[in-house]
Length: 362
Image (cartoon, rainbow, N blue to C red; front, side, top):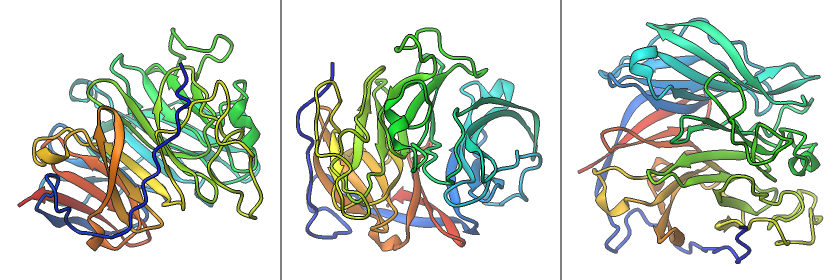
């Protein structure tokens, strides 16, 4: 059933490094790798190594001792233009036995391109047995709004967020198109058997603009955030088959000041759980369930490209009850944020000299 209640809009009036409440935590920030070329995503391997994507098309391995590898060989060619490039990296849940990883990226050229997934075997610093398992259809010309985040569901199926392609926003409401969707598929790229929309086998949710945050909680709840136009960035709880409204409903305005839609809600369309106006440019999303920062357990953390900080969303009973800027001393655009297996937090800064930072408790 769609949630048609109004979203909570939290206005943060002060920028604080520490919150003077039960949620205050002491931490230190340690650089892990520096001067990377637009790092976009990070993943963790069972042996302690980390994989980092660079938007321009490189995949790097950072060893447990901090050594950064040369670019991993045989990464698929990406369409590196505009917002396009190499996006997410995600190890298979059975990586220890099969060494499989999944990469999302923009493939094609200036006339026809789209978000694509490759599955490959990571052998040392080389990818082998690469296979394209999914590519968004239809293709588009604009090198913008790709989405590109990956996540596993508990049933072993894979989620991919796709953007509306910028100039094709009406496609987000068309379930015959895979633009502006959350796509769900099996490990081999075939559609999951129990898809919620009968004539759209890959569509799990729809009505999205440009989702660049995706995380799955331990209880199976799927959280996503997406860019609005001018204002109206959203945090959503994703539920199979639901319509999240774009562009029929939005809390944002078009870049020229015109209305995208006169509606902020409409029957049959799911309301966001949280809205940012003005836009923060959300990128990267994490639910913290580690032990290193116990006061933050169950909270959402989102990178903010515009505000150059991380936003902590205090979650109580599944609702956002407060919002606080954290790690503001980093002072850079934040592209990704992830929790490591040991409970530490990793932040990727955006740019041609981007950093990988590790945050631990003091």
